Image (tube, rainbow, N blue to C red; front, side, top):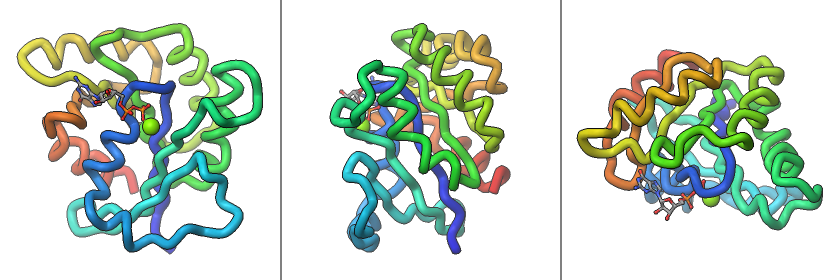
Length: 163
Ligand code: GDP
Ligand code: MG
């Protein structure tokens, strides 16, 4: 079985953009799994010569529980429990929000290997805006820009190191 890598984080941090970057056209190769909730998207990603099953926890607004944290948790629970590696994403431009902190606490308790991604860190100020994410206690933030394709080589090296 291929290792599962789950992308989690609050809405709008860029999870789906990152998913599309890493999966590209191979998304079409993964058939819909019956019974898999439609708020999760899966695709094959080829990362430094290794295939992984990448999961984008999306569509949080459609999930049942009535708080943002409840929806994030419900959407992420199955994916994280099966994950060889969790990519916890924050928005480096927006800074760390209370929902990031709350969700990070939950992710830490899942005891899965986690990489902390500070997305939207493109350009000259990118690396410094990513530093704030240190405070989450999930290790050193990896500055990336999913939209502009920056920091992805470093990210992919980190991912295979943690599989
Ligand atoms: P999700 O809700 O976490 O899946 O976030 P999306 O992938 O839908 O992205 C939310 C918004 O952030 C969209 O408008 C994206 O275009 C934008 N976005 C995603 N990645 C980046 C990035 O690296 N830099 C910037 N500036 N915007 C980004
Ligand atoms: Mg999304």
